Amino acid sequence: MSDGMDSMELPMKVAQASRLMRLQRAENSRGGLDPLAGQGRVLAFLKIAGEASSADMATILGIRQQSLNQSLIRLEEEGYIVREQAEDDRRRIIVRLTDKGREAEAPKNGAAKAFEVLTDEEQKQLSLILDKVIESLSKDLGLPDDPDERMEAVRKRMGEERFRRAMVFHGHGGI
Picture 1 (tube, rainbow, N blue to C red):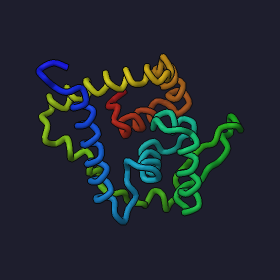
Picture 2 (picture 1 turned 180 degrees about the horizontal axis):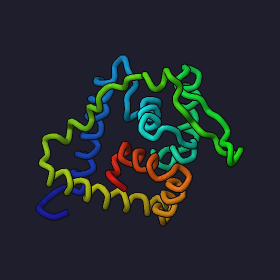
Picture 3 (picture 1 turned 45 degrees about the horizontal axis):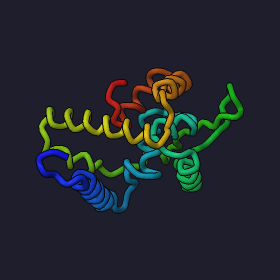
């Protein structure tokens, strides 16, 4: 690193910011479902997307199917969602909100407040820098070479409007 910066300084700062954002999110979500974690994230996604297959949700949310399934089981047991086989492909499971799920209120996203101290330009720069880091880490981990192909398949299955809303929810802007 240049300018005398220790090679661990940036990773430590990112880890510290991540811990503080988790603490802030936990504090803000007391008594509710956190829209950025687990079940709250799934509910918030479905409120925007309307419905989706579990495979498409896992892809867009960037979580393992097994982790998503655990959240779906709990949400179904609590009456927030229903899961049904897709009419066009019996192997696909479509997830929909129940009335209780549509009425559930999630706490405000406190983690986003952390970035309000940055100007719009600084937020754009940070976003581009993080995209570069994420791309490098994904490549090092051997994740799919062309995520655009995976996303395009999800877009076709979900339909353009639901996919757009889901992507905006997940912080991808107007993809």
